[in-house]
Length: 456
Ligand code: 8BR
Image (tube, rainbow, N blue to C red; front, side, top):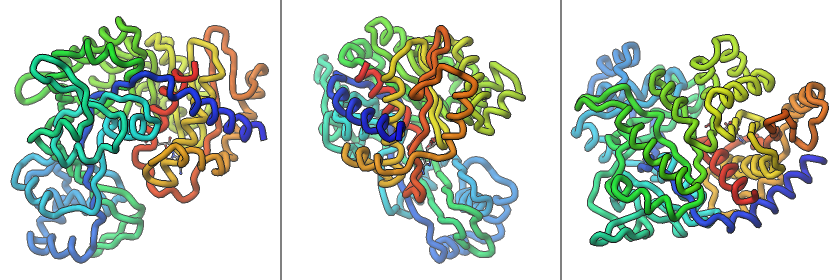
C-alpha cells in the first residue's frame, strides 16, 4: 500500500519535472545492433559446408576472436552448448562481408549512448546530444524522431542536427547478435538456457574513438547541456597494436570531465563490467570527477575486489543488502563521489551525500521504466512507463526492507539518514515473463539520474 502510493506519486513528480531539463549529453558509444534468431537447418547447412569437425574443435578450444568461418561457427556453437553469452571480435573483412550477407531479422540502435538517446530524447523528449563515432545511413535511421542531435561542423560553425540530417558515408559499426532460445538444438548440442553470441565488427567503439567535433569543440557542446552520461569505457585494453594505450583515451575523457565540471554540468558514469583489471582500477580512479555512478552487483563486486577484499566481494555477489551497503559506502569513501546508484534484481539503492526525497522518487520512476522495458522490449512512449504501475512490486525485497527497519530505526518511506549521507532503498517492479532483458540496466541508470536532477 505504502509503495503503491509512493510509486504513483513518483511517476507524477518525474513526468512533471522532466521537461525542466534543458539538455543531456550522451557519450561515447553508439553502434548498430543486428539481431538474428538462429535457425537449426540453416546453421547445420553452413557448418557442414565448412567442415563440421574443424568447427567442433573451436568449441573445445575457443579462439576468443574470429578470423575464419570455423571460429565464427565454433563460437556460436560454444555459446549454445554452454547457454552462455559470448562476444568475440571479428578481425577480417572477408568474415565481415560474410556476416553482412548472412543478414538479419532486426536492426536496433546499439551502444549505451545510442540506446539512451532513443529513451531520453525519443521518449522523455529532453533535448539530447549524442556522440556517434560514425554516422552511416543504416545507423542514423535507427534513431527515433525527436530532439536527438549530433554536433556537426558547417564551415567553422558548430551546428546541432538530428543524426538523419547528418548522414555521411562512414563505416557501419555492427554488433551481430545471434540469439537462441532455451532448448535450441543443433546437431547433438542443446542450449541449457536462452542466450546470445555476439560477433563484434566494430573497430571504433572498441577503442572509444571520438569524432573531431568532440575533440575540437567539446566546450561548445558542454555549454548547451545540464547533464551528461558517460559510457562505453568498459572495452578499453591496456595497450593497442599502434602503441597507444587506454591512458590516451582516459586523458581525453578527463579533459572532457574538467570542462563539464567547469560549466557545472552534472555527470554520471555508467560502470559496465570491465574485464581488464588495470583499466577497471583506472576507472575507479577517475570516478571522483563524476557526480554520480551507476552499477549492478556484479560490477560492484569487481570494484570491491580492488578497493576492498575477496570476502566482501563474494557477499556482494550474493545480493544481500548489508554487504552491498558496506560496499557502496566504501566506494564513496574511496572516491568522494556524491551519488552511487546500485541496481540489482528486485531492489535498488542510492547512496548520496545530500538528503532529498527526490532520490527515492527517481529510483521508483527508474523501476517503472525498467519494468516497461522488460514488458515491451522497447519503450516507445511515456504511457508504456505509466502502464508499469500495474506490475506487482517485488515481494522478496520486502524481507530486505524489514531487515533495514530493524537495523536503522529511523528508516522511513525508503529513506535512511546516515549522518553525512542518505541511503534510499526501493523494492522494484518485476515482470514475470520479460520480452527481453537487453539494455535494462542502462534504462534504469539513465532514468534515475535524469529524473532525479529534473525534480531536485
Ligand atoms: P544489468 O544489465 O546492468 O545487469 O541490469 C539488469 C537489471 O534489469 C537488473 O538489475 C534488474 O534490476 C532488471 N531486470 C531484469 Br535482469 N529482469 C527484470 C524483469 N523481468 N523485470 C524488471 N526488471 C528486471
